[in-house]
Length: 106
Length: 403
Image 1 (cartoon, chains in turn cyan, blue):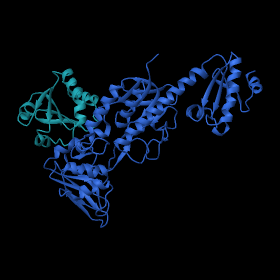
Image 2 (cartoon, chains in turn blue, red; image 1 turned 135 degrees about the vertical axis):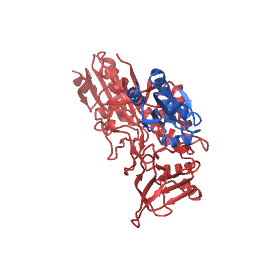
Image 3 (tube, one colour; image 1 turned 60 degrees about the vertical axis):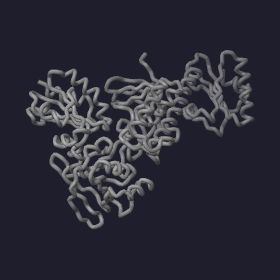
Image 4 (cartoon, one colour; image 1 turned 180 degrees about the vertical axis):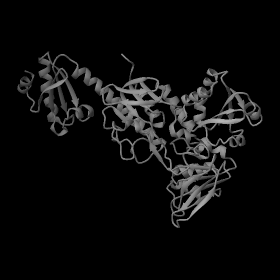
């Protein structure tokens, strides 16, 4: 997974080719930290199907808000610089994320 | 034979973790089923300053992490899975999860509670888009932005103060008249003195407005009936909790709000099923009371498992007839009669005798409806069933029932 911040978000996510999944998390978000190992596993498992990135919102708050992320955890999918799908909230499970990845895989 | 746990605890919040500590320490094979990271709701509270012995500086995630480590140290096993169905009436009890099925001699239900939704238009749609139920999780996204807090209980007032560290403006929406909140006095007074907090009294939230993100809320003054549109970026809702007890509906007795009804030993209406923590009907829902519930439930469960096993082995399983004498150790005249039975069994080698202190063994007493005012009492068991009972204890009468 590629750690992305406000400096390289445009380059790594918006200008990337194909589908990009971005995991928005924060160090105070227990649920995010809890999901992280599963998300990393999924990134490994579906390597090549899409690009996997993560953003620590604590250092990139304005970026988060510009992407309409105001609640963690949030998993957003991008294609050609546009957000095409997202799931967010305390209740999301690894299975939900995997289902979305499968849906958007090529 | 599948692997049977002595004790399975459903839920890894403070109630479940304390039960795990007590259960594992009593050398029971103890499992704690938790779908996520242990800690429960307490892990979503950053500042926790009223857990005895742990003052200012203690955090919810920190404290619950220590509890989980403590339970592990004593040998409790963490099972990362989601409970989907329960079969609790039989023995052993069956807990069906997404990834597997688990059997247990006793079960402690400690699934806790979750924040209650207000049910206002826009609330569901904008959840995660400005609507939040967890200040710890989301506060820092609202740095330099404006937020409102709905509610006036402990959580609302305390979390509002926490939010002032991040947000530009924090306005608390309170349904009561000016100066009246539901929170504890210490937190309330501290909040009233905090210049960073603003208040909207006599007010309720009518709707959350916004297209992709929260843009404003509509507030209604319940005294004047006036409505106003109030611009805000975030809406934090703390209006109490609701128990996560859907799995128990129709199985275990719940009150009309869905909380589990237990006695002071944390026993539910089903034998071998206990409850602990916020999911219980109780007066005070705090980390310390959840932990206390867990300790009581685990001790009661241990006693239940032990008594059930002993009863099975010594009374229900033997091929020979078994006499069971219920007695009250403080009743001298009654206990003397037990001597008669002792002698009788000693001279009759086909028999065995089990003495039950009816003032202590609740389980057996309840199962066989033994009345404490009518002791001593003798039952004759054969192949696991009561064949005869005897109140008037003498060698002659004992002879009669055995024949």
